[in-house]
Each structure stands twice: as C-alpha cells, then as structure tokens.
Image (cartoon, one colour):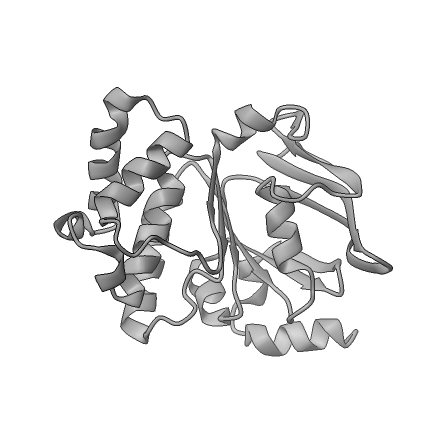
Length: 238
C-alpha cells in the first residue's frame, strides 16, 4: 500500500447476494479532503458505511493508525464523525437538546457536554438557533446541525454523505466554507454528485465505478478540466 496513511482501506469486498457492491477496493487517506464521485449504484454509500462501522466487509480490512477497526471498534468510534445522507430527527427536540443527546450517545463526559455543544454551534453558526425546534429549521440549518453532531467528539475522520444535497447555491457556498474551516488535522471523505463541491473543496479525487476504484489522484491533476466529463471518460475507458 506504500506509505501508511491515517486510515487505509485494504482490499475491501462487500457482496449483496451475488452482486459485488465493492470489489477489492484499496485506498490510503491522510489528512485533507477527499472527494468521492460515482454514479448511482457505484458503491459509494456501502464504502461510507464500512468506514463508519455500520457494515462489515466480507473481505479485507479498514486500518486506522495501524489497527484494524474491526478489533478496536470502540476506540475508532471515538475518533469518527459521520453525517448520513438523510437523517430522521425528533422534530420537537430543540437543536441544543438534540446535541446534548448526541453527546451522551458519543460518551462525552457530562461535565464537558454544554461547553462542547456551545463550541460546535458557534463553529457551524447556529448558536443563536440553539433553542429552536428542529422542525422549524431550514434545510441549510439542518445540514449545519448534521455537521455539528458529527464533530461533537472532535473526530479525526469525518465522513459526509451528500452533505449539500437540496441546498440552494448560497447555502452550498456557506457549507463549503465551513468544511474548509473544519479540515485542519482531519481526513474528510465527502461523497457527492455535485462535482463543483469536489472541484472547490477536495485535495484528492476518488472515482468509483461498479464497486471498483478507477482513479484516485490529486485535484491538481484535474485542474482546467470538467470533472464530470473526466469521470465519464474514465468509466468509458478513455
């Protein structure tokens, strides 16, 4: 695999019946933002779920700082932040109540919870909305709350599944700026169909097609090119 990264995916295969959702996928991720692009059914969400510990691979390993996460699940979970594509919230919870609940779920010491919630709400610019009911939030505010819960435990690995889906252009711009601010000291994996987000945010681009990684390269390699066009050319073998 070459030089060791913060997190490594080694020959991961995942099957659903006779279908291979992932086929011997290998990646090395260091600190920085990684943009994951692939068509529907390419295996993106399966890969994210394996990295988030939601699914177990049929073959292969995920290694974090030299340790198999399957054997050190609890320690790994403490370093992980995950924002799913869609999440069901209790609409009658306030933003603050929800984040305090998530602090308990993440086993953050009770004495630190209120300070931690205030800090992340400041980071995502929701401090003034902390008493607002979740059901009254705009789409952009809910996305920012999703990021807030993901970073409560100060993760080193941050996994985001379609985080800007459904946002208007201004909200997407604000969200991208937030991710730039959060990137220091972390490996962030961003799965999205919005190639502009990858072009403007990512340090590295991962192209996934039919369960296989077809390309993993620096964003600088694609400068001056349309990423959608490049992806179509890659999957067509050009």
